[in-house]
Length: 430
Image (cartoon, rainbow, N blue to C red):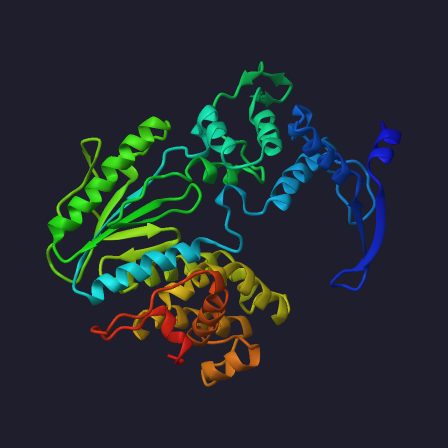
């Protein structure tokens, strides 16, 4: 077995320098790429490649860890499929949830500026990746990719099974009749292909990202018309979901009316079940309130950040023996990402909401260095080279908009409200 493994995989050892200055051995498997390309050439994905069980760790040299050869070849095969055709299945590179949140928030802000009603439904798909209909998925893939890739994906999805192992007991094999393989590179791509033909409506905005919550926004100055447009789109989606065996959980869906008026839009229904109304919705990772003030988001993110700091307080206060550089590393890598997510979007909130995050950051940094009361927050931030929250938001927003070279964002409409937009950071430093 060892000789076969040496023949299949050529191991090229190189020396790289770690952070501590010591050598770090790296192994590059070049033979696995040839195996994956042969699989693409033959149009077949072996079932043995799907074996994800890794044996117990053996004694290896420093800096290495055992890997499953079959899993490695399967991953390379999937990477080859993505590398040769980077745009298949309507895949968009360098896009994340922030771009989708930008579309939704931009539409809501335009609605508030024009004194309109924005009736929005946020749909939750029950067990999205686990209930994908294989026959329907293969039917859509066949019209999207070349025949070679179709044959690979056909063998990739067909005749799959699973077992459950507990201790020395093992269950019999059970066939997998639906769903895409979890943990693989192709899983989100296959689900995106399965939902690529989701019906749209000319009077609504459809925003979805992989298997996350789908947002449907209908904007109109008349709340009844906004409701009718939204309900018409939902009725079309009901037929489409029934045809492709996609189940939506109405109890986890939310209906929100974004407006500055006191009245709200009438309720909407999904298969005769009313969607629960709400004033705040979580989409994805951002708490969007009815009037787009970002007050609930900053309040909840401050509480979540403070809870995370309490768990790590023993490592960051004056009792800790860690160096200041390591304490800052813990803060920047574990605590800060909690409130920093989506700063390009919620950073346009008024200063009182942004100051909630700033006061918590100043408190944490002051305890990290054990600064006396007479040392100002400006001195602490300057010495530690940590930007203020306001400056951090402006920097993130400029970087965010500089990457949107392939995305067209609408221009600002005539301003009526005295509120800032996320793109305002491109012209001025708030």
